[in-house]
Image (cartoon, rainbow, N blue to C red):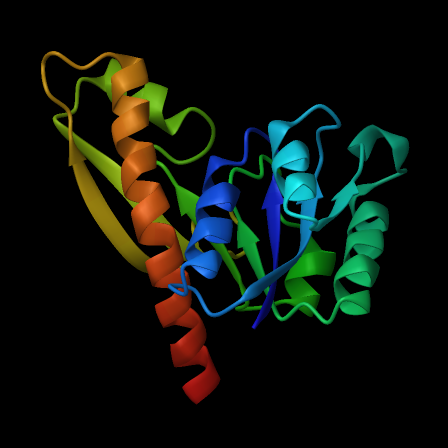
Length: 191
């Protein structure tokens, strides 16, 4: 299965997907990494693995449909079948949703529907909850509102800082995301 990863930051989940592919736990090839931040570490990670990268700056386009049409052209050129969001900090718009309906997944660092949107880890930490976690869901037009595929809880202990909570969540993400993507792609292929 040919996939593309969309990310805006460090790319630790993208790195986990590359590793899962190399280890045979994920039957896919990452054909393209799409990034909306020119200085993001994910670009360096992708290039180190000889993966194509498409970097764009949203402000340089007149509107979202214009840059999404350019992304779709890049994806189609590489015959990408699925899109994996991995820390991509933009809502997916109508153009991408129309071309990849039901074929885009996202990972979110909370047990949705709790703490949607940005800084979910900080929201959970400041909120004083005892359990948070990771959610993997299909992407729809809302913010973290699509059908949930999988969730895994992370207990917040009294000695945790925001940083140690983030590390605990990332450990779960790096294990869970490749596994769930593999299962999701197999299920979809059998439909």
